[in-house]
Length: 507
Image 1 (cartoon, rainbow, N blue to C red):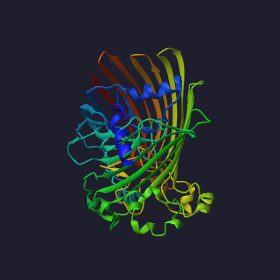
Image 2: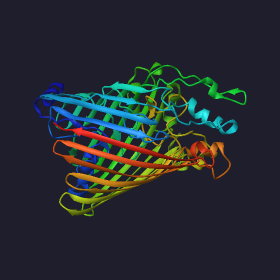
Image 3: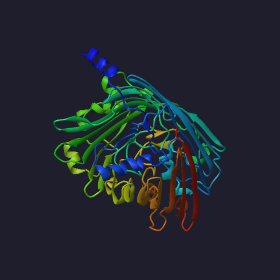
Image 4: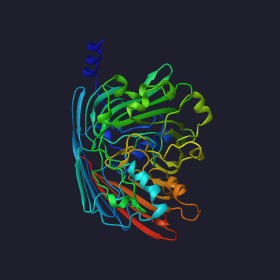
């Protein structure tokens, strides 16, 4: 049997390179919109997706970003939230021999990382934030000087058939149907080293089509050392140093398209992470996602000192109406039993939902409307049963992060976001505008304040333009953030300006 599988890998032509998650030339945007126009054949909930255009030289991109006052932006992979100028560079190549392929696409980032006004509230207002800082690795500022990193980026070594692939990669991943946020896996943080076994196209059966990805990887810390004196409040030192240890992540995502309901995609994702020094060597230590959900059926789970997240998602595409609706709901904690699911479904949950609609004008010309709502704040269940903010829990005190940034929703723990986006798509151009309401860390707000008028809320608005000229693609984004009660200080107002310019060369 193993000999037959090996022969299958060696003799079947494979798919080509992947489209990097969040690539700034809007290729993913066009790909997803095209599903609404011509019909759905992939869930678009497991990315990166394959690019069937074979090219040995991969696109080269330079991206420059500028924030005038405060760090803004997420879902930008290797880049960091920083004030001032930041530059991102990438280029690479793709090689293929039979079933074996090598994609090398390293990334370099340089950020001015200018100083800005950080969190400074004292007394009772500061203590709840220190609890979060002690249990996550999400620095406000990445050091006190300029920042530069070189990474392997969107690189991968794969052995693939037409249907499945196994390999080693540092690519960014995105799991789930959201376009602005994802609960478990997004390109908000830099890509991490991981082994992967995944489908490369839907696997068709008599029940319908299936897509999947299984990963095991290594997560790193930010390397930013906190200042212990900052953790002293009213003479009490809240500082709890973190261990200097990398973390292991093991995760699964699975998508099913029922044969009898065209355009419907049902997804499930589950992720575990723990310090490598706490890791065992058994099958359920390497692949813990095969364990039951109910804690009473895993009695020694707490001794493993690992944290987990899980989510269910649905995406329903209606090509006749050129419309899709979708949602994802997730939990940051185990349920004790099946009865616990029934009684406390809202415990430790977060969710997002959205819709996208295309209005076709002529071939290659259309208008796309999109709306998405993400809610990460804890529910009222916290009054009777503590679970803590999303992306942090009891054992892994770096939280669900890689190199100082959340692996899931870029808005971060306790935050909420509503996004409305309109795009005007033409064969060689895309232009559009975005309006957002961003409520920062409502979990902290409710812990620290007893008044209603100190919520830190931004209104983000701006536009973008992208144009393809022969083998070049140019794009520009200009966003403004009207920030009210910055850092939860009443009537402290900022107007941040963010400008992004990029150029991509194809070969």
